[in-house]
Image 1: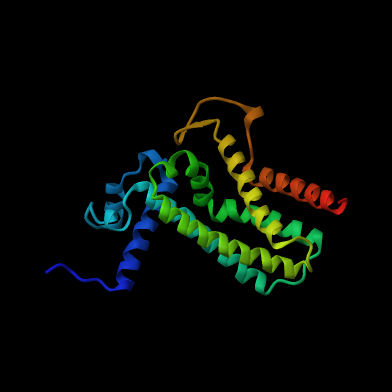
Image 2: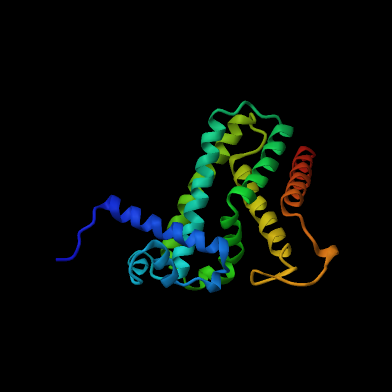
Amino acid sequence: MANQYTTDQKDAKRQSIMDAAVQLFKRHSYSEITMKQIAETVGTSKGTPFHYFATKEDLFMSVLLENYQRFFADLLVQLADYPAMSAAAYVDWMVAQTANLIKEHAVLVRLNTIRGPILEGKANMEETVSKRNELYAISKRVGQELVEKTNGLLSQSQFSHLFIIQSGIISGLMNMASLTRFNHTELKVDYPDFEIDLVPEAQTQMQFYLKAYLKELKHH
């Protein structure tokens, strides 16, 4: 008789597969990773990942969207005990979160750069939209919490939208910061004018954008 697993056991196995995918993605490019490698990393049969994810793209799309949900959930916890924010304090907070996203959630940022051109090609649209709806809902909760913390500096929609801008700035810079590498291989080239120090550059760009955005709103 086939093994019967509890819901908790199934959830744990699914999470272990996602964790293995993340660990491999930290060391390899997306194209180098196979579902067989993921199964071997988990220590299970090569067909097991396909019981939970129809394609590699479905797996990595789930990693991206579910971990972004956790990122926003962590922000909600942080904001719950955060003091009231002035406009300047909000800018400083977002700049700090930009560094946090790059340093602590680099896999999410990297996956974001391949979401459209690669993952969406073979990911299940219905499942992706469902998870995207969940992500949208929690991002709105973070936006509303910022409305309250800043005494209405911006609307919920504006606060939520600025996280998309943040993600775009980081993803764009990360993509351009790899010009001295090719598929995870360091090239023996010197492009000093192309070099990007990702964290400080992303923080600077985020700060410039937010200050200009708030200044523009103030004049209207």
